[in-house]
Image (tube, rainbow, N blue to C red):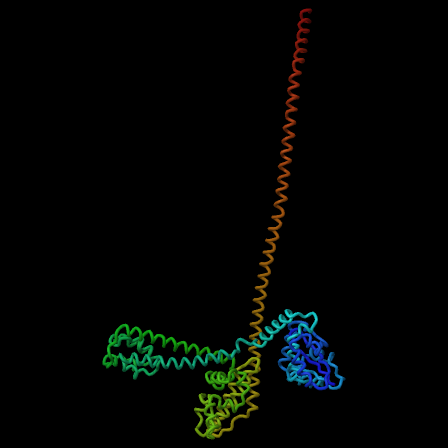
Length: 538
């Protein structure tokens, strides 16, 4: 009997499922195929043994990255060591990927199997996984898959913005297309304006200069000595400027209408703007190559290096190529034609455009192209895999190619590669340390600016909170003040009422005193009468 366990990697975690024992693994295939769409039947064949959920999204991403690269992660190793029965005879572990199976077999000595019935079982597990694991719903499983899928994709496409070779590929393609278009349009301007001023074609050979001259001259009959200085600025030659002036006076060209002249000038302006854009694009390509592949640029030039990267597809692909492939890169048609006709294979491809092969003698062109391809491969690998690429190695490799050219011509022995690489390594370490120091300085400044910004934001937030608290306090105090005022006004009203009651009483007292006044007057009268009697008696 054979006991088969199947390892299933899900976005939610690792699952180990046991398949019912059979005499031969092949006997399971028809049973699995029949029951794969039915959960009930499939559950009789496959049973969940263990499930280990991922602790976090970061842990899930680390595990899935390890699986995609065919590496055995510590979490998976612990899970298998804990749950896979190792002592039973003929125990097999079914896995979906052969690479991870080889890693498990090498690390844990567990016999692994892929394909066949294992693939069908994994298909069924993937379909019914949320039913096999308790507490896992289809919605939560799909959410886990979606989240992990986004994280995995983001991690895969993460790159350094300053080292993107896609921009180089697009730039060199656009540069080649612009060269073709500018050449075609310039020939059209020459043919069109040549009807009016045919002699200008022989005097001014450069396309860009011709378009500028045609736009400036316009109607040749209006050209005079006053325009000589301006023409000299355009053609950059006093003799040519004088020749243009003399040719305009005795030209065999036909007359041209103003509307035709306007169209020619407009088209010439477009060609001039395209030529100027090509110059700016070439500067951009040069700066981008110095960022992405400085060693390759220093060795073979920016344009040829960019063409090699474009033809290979990326800098990484170019770094993976052997020197023999780099040597004939761009000459594939000639290579296959030579193989088909059993003729001589090409000695060089795109690297023919470098200056080294043109300077070498005819008998040494093949030798120098082979040597140059070797150095280009080294430079591309240095640029691709170094953390901070520098042009130091490219300069040293260029010196080696120069010495090899001199050796072919004069027989002077070049320096040994070991000595040159030691010098290059020392210089490169100094340059890298300087670059790191500058980057650290920039990073510190950036952190300081960020800290100040955060402090300013925190201070502003604190002020806002204080203002809000003050407003709340005011809002709370306003009702209490209103209540106090109300109470005070009620108190005043009551006091006024008491006073009003008290004042009539006083008045009453006064009135009563006035009423009692007559008896006192009577006493006075009596006294007065008594005095009169006494006087009479006396």
